Length: 253
Image 1: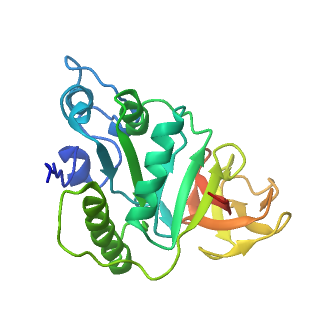
Image 2: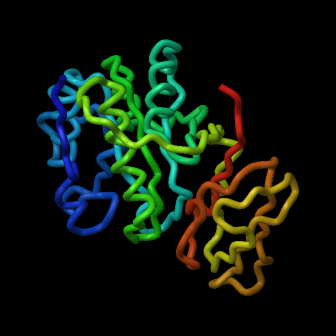
């Protein structure tokens, strides 16, 4: 038994405009927690979650994808916290959710994310990267549905039989500093590896061809270590600060 709160989307203006930021106040909800009850609309939404909803929750499952610019290999994910007990619970739910890959983000310190608000309230937080590139993927959607049911069963909220996955989950680790590849130039992005491909240290991942300054050399992105390509940029046009790849490495748990 238990109570389930389902929110199809949290920021209506951003959802309707198909962007990460609200057109009303130009804020990304998942970057401004704990919010401000007296602030702009997006800040007020964050404050409501932080002050009202999250303190009531044992488990917060945040279902999202890579948006229109990033394409992810579908996986369930969590952030490494500073609480070992909370981390152990998070890993249990990660495995209960299921899927071919579970991703653990290491050293992720970007402020204002829901994961840190959940940790402050001793709430287990797991998220997902269910595809992306601006499309609805049937396999990713099916994973989300099955994963939610398995987590509800693990919590004891439902007693019905749920479908168990046949394959064992591979746990991956991604270091925010080492495994993210970001462009520093304007240009056209040409990937040289596929999503889900295993790569070796020193392997060419892709190139950025300058589109504004033809005297600038082509920028090559080379793998800093072995890993699996879990994320790849979708559009060819790229600007400074755009993420082009995420890699991740298998770990034992």
